[in-house]
Image 1 (cartoon, protein in one colour):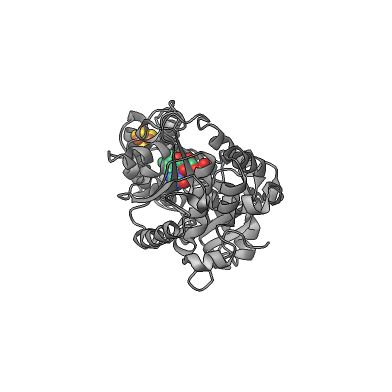
Image 2 (image 1 turned 90 degrees about the horizontal axis):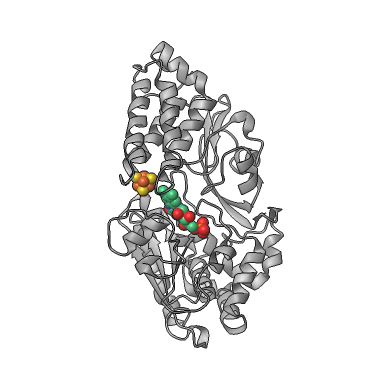
Length: 427
Ligand SMILES: Cc1cc2nc3c(=O)[nH]c(=O)nc-3n(C[C@H](O)[C@H](O)[C@H](O)COP(=O)(O)O)c2cc1C
Ligand code: SF4
C-alpha cells in the first residue's frame, strides 16, 4: 500500500515546513478554510469513517459534531500527545519526524469546531519531540497556518504546546484537561462530557495525534478515498502498528486498517526472534487489552475483528511473546505498571491494583496459595466498570485474560512453587 501517514518521515529535513509544503502540505487546511464550511469538514470526516486512534476507536466526525454549533463561549481542541500506553510508540514518530502533518490536522479540526485555541499536550519525557514541535509551531505561525487570519481568512486560532510532567493517567482525556488547567491530573466523572464542559469549563474536544494526522488527506483526497482503505466501512483508513517483543524486526509499520496480525509478525516483522521458539501469545492493542493465545492470532488488526475476540485494537501496540515467556512474570510486570500509575481516587482501582500486584509477586516468588488464582480474577472482576476512568478496566482486563487463558500455567506455578516454563528468564 502507498504510504500516507509516514510518507514524509524518511525525507531529508522532514520536520521542516519547507519540505512539508513541497510535498503538498497545508493544502488541506487552505481548502477547508477557504472553500468549505465548518459543517462540511465535519461531514467529510464523518463520511470517511475515521475512528479515533487513541484507544477507544470512537468515530471522529461524530465526536466533532457534539461541539455546540452556536458559539457562546471559547471552544478548545486538545491534541493528546501523551502516548504512555506500554507497547505504543507511533505518535512520537509522527511528532518527531513529520510534525506539520499533525499540526495541519489540528488546525483543520479546530476550524471544523470553530476552536479558539489548540493545545498539544505532550508527554513530559518527549523532550526531543517538544523541541521539534516548538519549532514547527513557530513556522506555522510565520506562514499564517496558526494565529491571526489563518490562510488569509477571518478565522483565527492559537496553537500552544504544553509539556506534561510524565504520568500515564494524564493521557486519559479528563485527567489531561485537569492537568492542563494546572492541577494534579485527576480524571473527572462524565457527564458532563468535554464537548459540554471541558477544559476551564468550555466546550472541548480531545483527539489523538494519529487521528488528527489522518485529517489533511481526508480533506485533500476526499472521504471516499479514505473510506476505501481498510476492512469495511467501520474500519477505514491507513493505520500505524507498533510491533514489539519476540520478533526479528520490531518497529512502527504503516498498513491499511485490518492488516492480518500474522502478516505483521511473519512478513513485515520478519518472523519470530528465535526459530526454535514459536508464538505463544500476543497482546494486540497496548498492555490494557486482553491477551490472545497463539491459536487466536489468525485475526485482522481492526476494531471489530478484535472486538469479536473480546479484545481490542486499543493504541495498536502489538506485543509478541514466544514460548519462553512466563505468563505470570509478564502479568506481574503489567500489573506493577497499573498499580504504580493509579491516581488513587477510586477505592477499587487504588486498592485492587496494588493487591493484584502483591498476589502476582507471591506466585512469581514460588509462594502462591491455592486460592490466589480465583482471588486474582475476583479482584479484577470487581474493579471492572466500577471506577471513574478506564484505567481501572485497563488494569483488570490483562489479569482476567491472562488468568483465564493461561490458567494451567498459573496453577503449575502454585502447585510446583516455581516457574515451569522451558527457557523462561527470571531475574
Ligand atoms: C488511562 C488512560 C490513558 C490514556 N492515554 C492516552 C494517550 O496517551 N494518548 C491518547 O491519545 N489517548 C489516551 N487515552 C484515551 C483518551 O482518553 C481519549 O479517548 C483519546 O485521546 C481520544 O482521542 P481519539 O478519539 O482521537 O482516539 C487514554 C485513556 C485512558 C483511560
Ligand atoms: S480508575 Fe484509577 S486512575 Fe482512574 S480515576 Fe479511579 S483511581 Fe484514578
